[in-house]
Length: 144
View 1 (cartoon, rainbow, N blue to C red):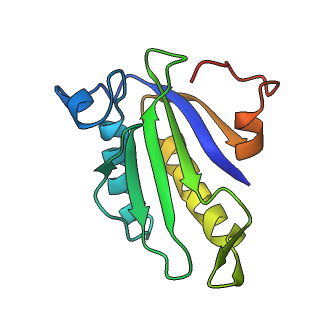
View 2 (spheres, one colour):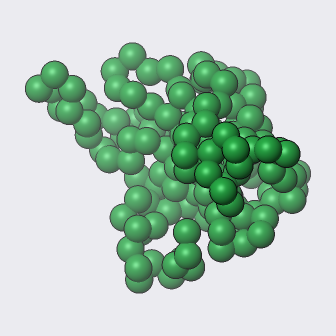
């Protein structure tokens, strides 16, 4: 499943003081807000982005398993961003049950791809599977 997307854009500069909400050198609230707003128009029930130490989380309503998107700047480029969908695995376990995540994650991935593809000022979009992204031989730049 392709769950990690990198892209470049000048549309999403850091907010003043954003680093105090997360960690130094980290930002991504503007792209998280952009996705949060547009995902709602694509029919997803989402919560306003919340800060984590590495970036921003958009919780997506889903009754069967926890579903969310992470967003942060991507240090490979001064205008780079990385967003990823969790879970990134085809199955999760919950109360001794194995739950198939593929259809829900694929639907969210398609919506994200549509939003990013149709937005003005977003370029060099590239999707990865979790394993491709984490692999040192994937062809992506190595500094994250």
